[in-house]
Length: 377
Image (tube, rainbow, N blue to C red; front, side, top):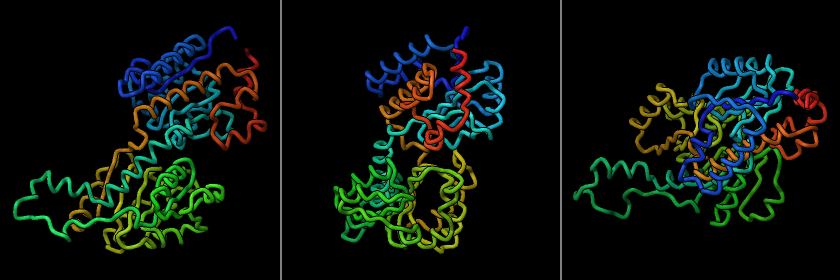
């Protein structure tokens, strides 16, 4: 290959001038990011979008002009299939665990990598925080003090501002992957009864966690759990999986937590049921079908809170993985994969690259574009 391969990054957040200068990130991690950028600059010509959130048209313009070999992105950068098809791209790499923002072209010749095994602890801790905050009603009680409602005439009493203890609740986990398993491990230690539903039963984990029980149907889990926490990927089988039928089965005064993907939950069904008072369910959401949350949805939620102030609500801005070191580790994994792809010469060299699971199992079957790249070396 006479010319260097080209790498286009859809955001400047990945660069040494941005994430590698964040003081909240451990110095060793920042040094690793700088070192990886040095390696990458020796291997490839690099183009970086001069901002954080390009739209599809801007990404398309850069791809057409720069003609990259690899494209690097994250969740806020939608990558449609038609952008990928008529290009020289061999791979799209995302600095996220989820990859539903990337549409595979119809011929499925372009590899997709992601960053699994990094953020599960941060998201698990965050999810538990949301659960505890809701059970103890910290949002409403904070606002109560903040708004000056706590006065001398409002004295402490035995039955005032009652909340619930986590240990007394039955937790239902939908999806016992990395994040769901981490939550189960942390809360089993405290004696919390945990039910889980997954397409695969995790008998080995069950044997090590005495309070963990497999539930064979979602309907049964939704009927039995006091708290339901969602931890499944978004795909064509899981979109709107949590619908009217399942939501109607939830216990009165139960809690629904979503730190996975917004479109897993049919939010319109959920809000309709709350508005009609057909269910009484507290909720804590970090993700939404449309992000940022659209004004009409927020207006509906505020109206529900006004008419039913006893419902406990926590709304967060898709922030579950926003632990400083976790974000640093994600970028390291992301850059390492790009370098490994550029240095690869055969399928066997892709063994340690974090290719998405549905492609990983087909590495030997498909005529990937990267093979043309190898032929030009």
